[in-house]
Image (cartoon, rainbow, N blue to C red; front, side, top):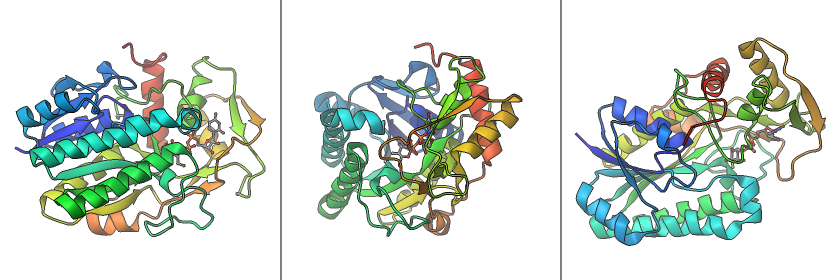
Length: 329
Ligand code: UFG
């Protein structure tokens, strides 16, 4: 049985991956500093270490004790708006964290890593869909750190033979089918959780940031991809590396986009009542439209997203309606 070390396994996307890796028969060890992750999101079948990856001594000891076959890395700060105000925290957590992780992998002979990257590496792109060859030009510190982390892996591959797959997610969304784990950020800035706070009476209305974009209904279009489809891609990516393949970068999205207004309509269908919305000014830094080309992941990883928009909204509602104030801890 292969052992996977999931770094940041108590966070939103990490915790869904932990479940899927366990269900697919992997031995899973989780490391998380619990700064933004949640103990309640952790699967009890996984072995857990509370550790910050910048603590090299502790991290190295875990690697030496556990001897993982591969690493899946989610341990990064991920809020675009916060990154604009606190860039140095993002460089420390994300870039310096990656530096220590790669040092420890190199020193302990672990040479396979799947990395949680982002569409934010591309920046404000005009031509859709975005392919892996679209030039990268991040417009915020968060996206910049993700791109830097990719470059660090690239040079460590050349120098030390550490093979990586970098997965650039578009808009991660939804929750585990039964609603037992899901999305809980503080502060919450993502569209779906905020829309669902209205029927939960946690906010009066959802603000639609801009209705004068050059899109079919004037609101921004995004490519929402279910978190379990993302997890499936991670399993496929590590298996691709275990087969001895070369490092790669893949976009992960459905290849289709929904507008903010369409997301609100979908939420109304799932919740069964009207959701009050108010139009607000554009949010700084929001591109009008972001849609992935997922051709490369389909061809090379054999990955196809299976969750529909309805399933995304339904699973998110299951989580939020049963965790009104998020996780307890
Ligand atoms: N939006 C609203 N009202 C809200 C919140 C969001 O209208 O209250 C809109 C945004 O303007 C945007 C869309 O809903 O058009 C989606 O916004 P999110 O904040 O949910 O997601 P983003 O597209 O801004 O961000 C996502 C990921 C980031 C990643 C980025 C890449 O969450 O991690 O894509 O561009 F960096």
